[in-house]
Length: 280
Image (tube, rainbow, N blue to C red; front, side):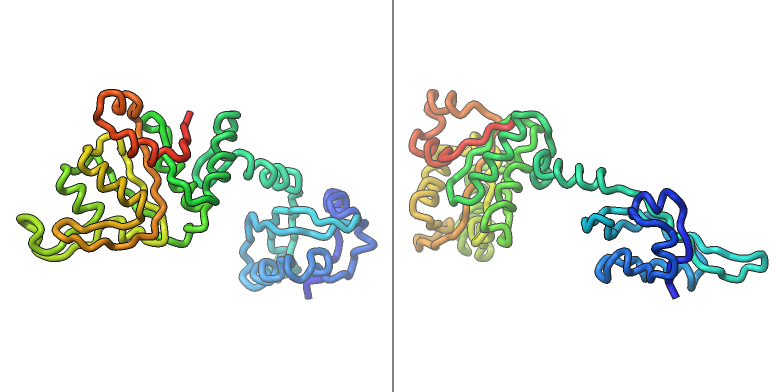
């Protein structure tokens, strides 16, 4: 009936109570109804199979709650008749508490880092995410620009909306226009039907323009209009379509050099870097 029969000194130390005090007490009285491992114990009684590594909390004598890792083992007599269950408690309060304290400091979404520069980046992402500001993410290849973009999205008010990524270096100028803004039937050879662009697909969410430094000046002009007026025009159409989307750009290139050489428009440069995040 799930009453405590006895316990060893280690259990007495964890619980802060003696075996005589707890003899005959219902085991759920130790844990509380919401944390009681009743199902685990009953399963071992029913099946005779042990249960491993079930974590829950237990009431401590000082009124606080401790974290314990549980295992069960069936107790059988010589002919295999069930005599009860041994409940083995491992105190993991300190480990669990340390993990809870460290997680917010050293992790943001799928980003992990203890270095002061990474923690500074986490703080910046958290600050920026709550705004609607256009973000430019800068960093070498492989440093995690996509993870930072996703962290910005997931920490923002648009987290429930779509997260759409476009690699701007993978497509020619004409195809990139169609990919971003969509097109109407007959806009160019092969356009056999209307197509919704990625900006429209990202409505209510975030669009990430990866390798923004590879975008041609022609496409820069069209993106500039999106950033300024929040409208797009499909290729082959002249009707402006409103879009509600946050723009995040990413690059591993030196945009200032592109600006100096004339390959990037100055007005476009300052529009995409309202907030700049640099990944160490």
